Image 1 (cartoon, rainbow, N blue to C red):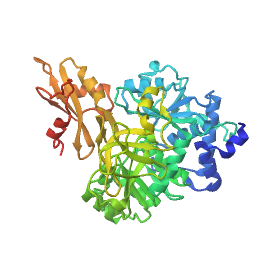
Image 2: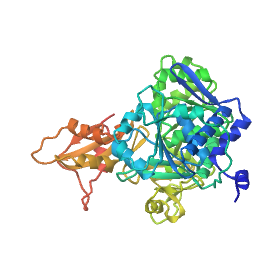
Image 3: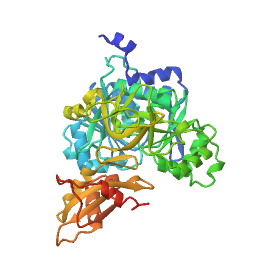
Image 4: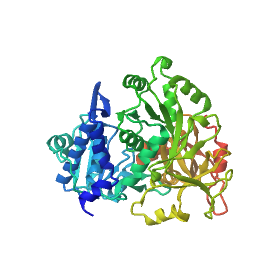
Length: 525
């Protein structure tokens, strides 16, 4: 196929921004308040900036299909790099910079990133393991905080100022060409790279807009980390609808609601704990939120009393979105009209997604029966990068297997029951219990350990370690927590370590977690 024919009918995410520049050239696309200044790009300015990123990558000899990593808190520059890579046909790898040392090294080496864009505030962290990265040829610093930068780094601002903003139309991009790799914690000790195509994000960003109520020219928020699949999808959906994304580096409830009022925001996405924090803002009822169309939450339900007050304050529907990175990521929406129902509901599938409940033999189960939640959709991942075995494992019987258990109620609304594997969800992040267990077991005084998630009013689930110490040893909670802090990301560190003489095991020697969850269910409540 020649490039002329390809560009006429292809699905390529980079083309989205060219279209928006033609349709809404003077409307804001991305906005950030930084140091008391309002910084912004219109859709036309954004497209030109993305063309510059494309040309920068070409000058650095980064070719179509190469991987480029990005490590940065939320910022305008983050958006430029992510979407600029998409225009260049380069596979972008947004890095969870909160990871520990070993996971950072693994991620960058596993994806064989040839270049790394890194905000200046994070350079010291990456410098500590710089010699362990095997494939990086280019280090580009993004100056935001004024931290010192070694002379070996290229300057993002300098590159941007000197790059051409001309549109390139010489790439042949196929719908299922790789677009991005998002690393997610699996049940093993190392993250898995979820490889997603242009088509997957294109379909999910449009279908999510339909189901979540993101209207044309909506103004929405980007508060969650932009490296996270959920915020990435929401921001892309807003831009896909000719809208504007308000980027927040930090979440400060009082300043947040002031911006929401000032900018006449239409769509807000926050975690339940963030929504509840807004209720504590002084005189919250006196703010003008009349522009709001939809409020969204994810990762966990909101308790009924808080939800009722939120709806009274913000005077708009509240909806819950669910899914996983492997689905790019939204699959299921619990609409406001069903909010009277009690329980951990996920709701109904997106218009482009099949959703079913399956038993272990591949049989689809009727409503009311508990089984594994499975999906089919064009937005499903292409696979786990370099891991065909794991890809095949989640693709049996012609469905993508979520690893979660649930059932459909009498209204065919999906109810989440539990995870098939012991993944802990804390503060919106996934923490594999086995990963924390391995760190704790490395301590010479620990004989046995099991890690569980317990209900927590702030974190949804709190990582909690149950430890049996070796006989005649003296190990403290503080000592084990410090060990974890040195090896794990902050959100993976146990909130508590409980010492016991023994842990009930199965006949095969595995620790039984269910009795522990029941015994300590009220530890943090």
